[in-house]
Length: 93
Image (cartoon, rainbow, N blue to C red; front, side):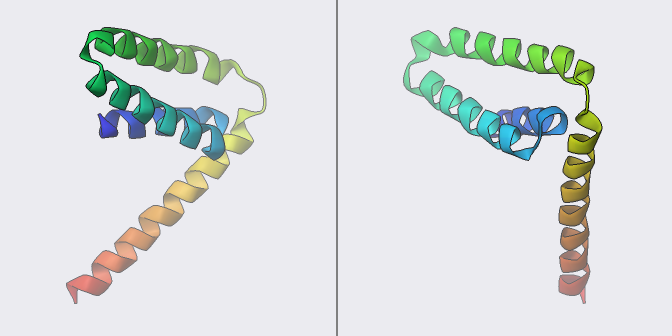
């Protein structure tokens, strides 16, 4: 479920920026925890998360001016990937 929250955060960050992605990931994690604590509400939790993801995927590409946000997300992702590769190479030696 944590992986699901991270994926939701990444999808939201791709279309709406890093701050919105972080809020979405924390919100999704909270919903998943609520689903674990209250099993009778688990289907509602999954339904809400599925509706949110479908909404982001349908609305996100249609928003004007998302190229700047996309560039920011990709720049941060590349920085993280580069740092991870450098650390891996350093540890491998």
